[in-house]
Length: 327
Image (cartoon, rainbow, N blue to C red; front, side, top):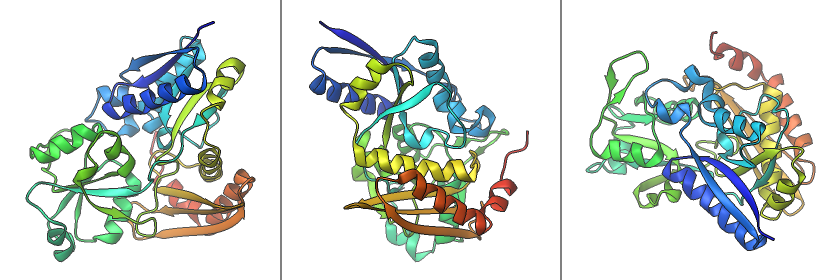
């Protein structure tokens, strides 16, 4: 007997590619499952000018409307990039039913045509405008290239690259424009998903730019009491990615991080052990607190809690509160 599953996702090229991969895997593990992809255009995609803070950060901008449809029962599940999911708040009634195997979590540099990496490195960034909307990337960029100008840059991955190539200007939340950008910092996984990996001129190592919590992991969320959907999703869950997800998100929960917090976290499993590194920065990149711990891979939340508490003991709470958006 054929059964159906409705999965909600954003309309962007990358989100659709991720959701189609989920559907493909489900069709292999549950052959009688009819997967319907339901496309959304959340407020973060409709408004590509405003700072995401206006819409409650990434959670409100990209996740909230699709989550509401799952809670209402009009969707069985929702696809999210894990890094877009708030980790400092409870999600009553919802659970991550599956995580796909992690794609490369690193951040990458994309240059405007006609520029080379030597142009950037040789000038130590002086005079360069590098676009990003992520406070974490901006903080790390300022540490690596103190003389660059970080500019506000929004949009889907392929849209951002097209705007870079065309010398397009970026509208600012308060009015006016900035740009054109000379380069972008973007997630390698996102560039690969939209077929633009050939534009990458340099990957930043985790030592240079620690990834965002959950970067490179695709998560599928469903209702906690929808046991049938949870059973189907479990067939495509990648255990290593799920363990990393639990560890990294526990750090966010302990830190009570918000959408304006330059927080990073990256877990790596080797055998039965997990190494977890997390950091908190100020927006200027002048202050950088980092902690690494190793623990049993099968106790990820415990490890994440310990790393988060270590960061609080180093003063991370003050940095986070200083950057907390005003109501």
